[in-house]
Image (cartoon, rainbow, N blue to C red):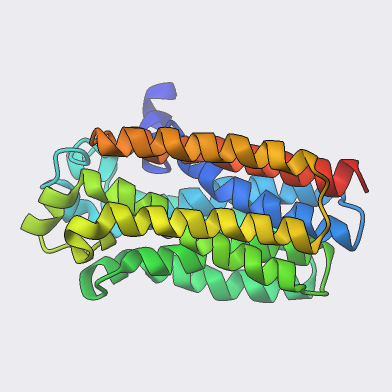
Length: 284
């Protein structure tokens, strides 16, 4: 049974959960931010966790369905289930539909506003893999779609959208573009050969510099939210830790350890979430 399930676990990248975390932390940041208006419900926390797992899995499956021919030509991806043939295209589509149905079922436990927002962004998530073929900077679409988790999670708790939420969403978009640019730098040479677009290619020699500027933009959004919501001075300690992680990431990227630098963003998300949770939930 395990041998039969393993290809589908790999197809959904459940064996590589860092992608789930990078979708989950911004979503939980949005949910916690809603705590400035109302008390966070356990049910909504569970919905965000389950939704992050399912949405990221759906995104991985539809990406591999779209790219399985390309994946065969890229060293890092040629062992993916569709590329190596351990899962058929038909099985992948069935699996995608199954995950999609589970995602829709979760929406029955939400409210009409969350349903409308989720369906809108679900369409964009499905279309995202195609953007790598005709947009010069598909990371921007990735940022808009996967960053929407912050808005969707917020809407579970509150329909009063604040300036803090808008700032968080823009900051998260910048963050996603930044770390996915690092991820794309790992595949830059292969992508050039097979005509796949990315900000790593578009920005050329300036890709790292622009990615770092965007990352600082994300940090700036967190600091601005802290000022608007009158966070305590304890948040400064949290921010110092974030800066230390940024410097460590910068060191990894400078050494061309792009995947390691990408993975550091998991801890950046954890630290940011702890800071928000302490200020908004614990001190309120």
